[in-house]
Image (tube, rainbow, N blue to C red; front, side, top):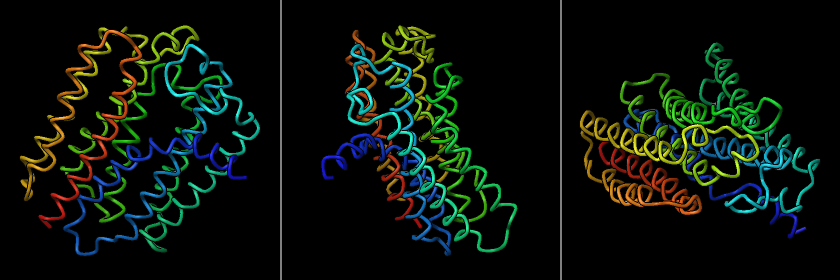
Length: 302
């Protein structure tokens, strides 16, 4: 029983969870000055976002495993389906159960946020919850999985940046400020950068099985330039946000420039796909750390 639990925890890929809540933390940070700010809603949002991420992780394991994308040539960590630790049927059931749990948590969150009124918002967010589950699964699962046609970057920006930041802010205060769109750029671009690193790492194995990610389409050289644009675009959005809001301790979020600057230097110098693998953790944790530092800076200003 314990061994089985460890396998499911491995399949859940807990290391990906900090990135999944970066947008939630940032969106809630924008609402800290609201006298009706709810810490309960904040906690429920983070739990819901992490459940959506687990659905995505199970689905990626399943989809790439079934398609044969996860094979001996893949550089990243071995996945559970690839290793034969979980069957196709078990993973499919895991996707269904976690999808149900994610939707249940989202429903509780939405009704707590809007009560029994504002039914147009309730149905809107329920629809967005269904869309989130669809996007999590369809990235790699099915004959028309959008991740295999280069659309992963767009969906990551929309869901990790747009929906996370704007949705979290709206659930707290029923409105969205202009400042929120700057944080969409910051968190969205950094999240896409994590995906791009993953795709640059897997560029050879993905190309061999016909997975046409943006990195495969661009080639390593142009994918590196694309990556530089993503990181610099995110930092530009951060500077604009801090200049506009001028929070106390505004220098705290700027500390993130140090690891990201060193990261860019290494990416430019990297010559082998395997060298991109450790950079995934750097950017993912930097994005999470940035959201926490933003939250602290805005909390101290509220």
